[in-house]
Length: 525
Image (cartoon, rainbow, N blue to C red; front, side, top):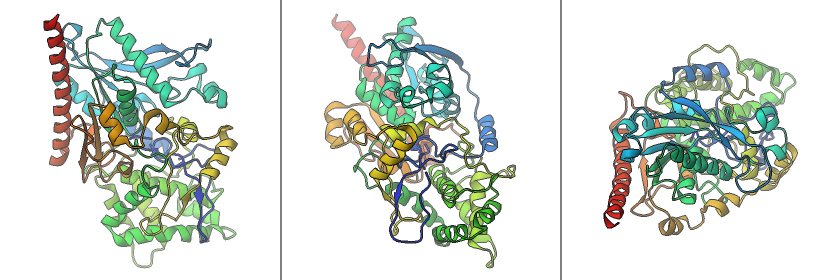
């Protein structure tokens, strides 16, 4: 998803619009996403997948404390910094979480469920991926959550400060290196446990879902199948229209209330107009309860834009604490707040009441820090400037956001300014494919589930139709960002239960086929 969001450079049409500030998952995601660091840099539209997460540390820590607690051991594995050269580089310690409580062990070829860690602290993703923990007992499976390099505690060079120091130290933060980490880790772990015959099933949501699908394709001997939830593997180059993400976000609000949609659409010009007055930034700071006085209108606009996009991603049918503590169907609640103020209420008052549903639903936050990075995902800014180039745009007709166009030249200039690197917008499709993906996957892939909820804006960049008998798409009209991977609740609707049941059936089929093939080979010998 998670999934996990850098703000895209925007080419403006001739209209009254704010000048783009220096990603919106960042997805997540789809996802995340799927706000920028203190520098408030503006990168390409990889929105949710990284720094598209909430900007209130208090609420985010509260959400994490409320997440389900699963039992695991925390271990560390020494990884090569560069798997693709023989240079004498320092190794680093990769954190991984492991649970063998229900594992049937090597004697019975018990399966191994491996979640491909996203762009953040692995404990956060483990706490919010209840599906894997809940189905492990019925399969007799080991559960492993390895952490993505350069996130959480898995820092090369000994610290985040050193790892993020410059383009040279950051150069090993790539999806290819992360997949190699997972491949090496599981290979060595199986060897140490004499579990070479134990089949591996991959899981992932948002960016983690992309990694799960790509790992199945790049390392087919490592796993027997992958569940890629909310994985926007087609959100690159021109594989999908760049307006797709923001059109889906906007449709979520339009579906609830046309007046709510129009108020948000109108608000951008109002914010720009106020911000241009002498005391405008101070007024906006006060109206939106920002902790420090705004330095630009863009920082406020990006903050609002991120919240609307996150709300679309986590528009779950019941209350959750994934990104922030939120009510069920949060977009409905946002629009209720916006629409319920008396007729004399200003546009800005309505927007503040609505946005507070996302940023302050508990009512415990006095002011908002727009530059917070509560889940430690700032590495996505680098990834969004190198290989994770996801073009985004906003169409005046279909979107409630200001119209803007994806500008690769502006993106390149911003990345050169912030990281001294040029983006490689065609690298992901070169490395993992994308063009003519159906024929390619049909010819060379197998055993991948692409699951999506169509309320999730990242679904527009995912695989929504079956590719073959073994590469299948499971979609739900009312599902949001990797909802199927979340823990089961008493409020789960029937369609969600059906989706998870289909996933379990497919995974069982992969395992049964694997075991049958092993028995046939053994009998032949």
